[in-house]
Image: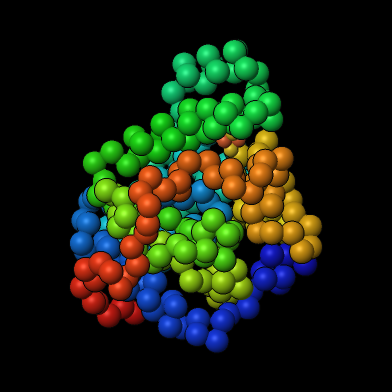
Length: 256
Ligand code: SF4
């Protein structure tokens, strides 16, 4: 069975969720013209969001962090995605001098030696390129969902707790909703999802999961649950705002 056959199952209120997601993306595009981008890992959630951005013809750029340690399946999908996307796709790579110096000092698989070294690798390969990708942006779009892990259980649709607004248009989508959208719209996805990789990152730091394991159990599986973020979504302020506590974006009706 492939991932669609295994997971596609829409929630009872899927139509409402989809409409809210479309509205949030349209409103964000209007509010943050040219100052917003989608961060895509090319995982299932992100290909759904990119498909919506393309379908709704929004002026939202998409960027991918090519860490130099991605699976060949992800790199293949990246090329297909770049060729098919209406909206520009920008690929950010790490500073090669930093990568070379780190690998020479600590080896190719330093991430397994200690959490500080794993975080240093993430800082070089992900966080520094992310900072460049977000330079000049007032908002960014991610595929975070509350269901993904305990650390993400409170993810709001729109997070204004950091200076740069983070929009999580799939915050309340289930895994079944994500795959239902992929099925309904024929969205190209990473074939690793068919091999029980629900969450896909760099090759050395991602493994398949078994039945009953947590959604993100395959990411940095040798570390404690609390440490399992690469820094992209680590909060620097105490609390996230929710929709009820921020100025709402202007309401716009959309159709697809
Ligand atoms: S996920 Fe692993 S390989 Fe990728 S940047 Fe972080 S430590 Fe390095």
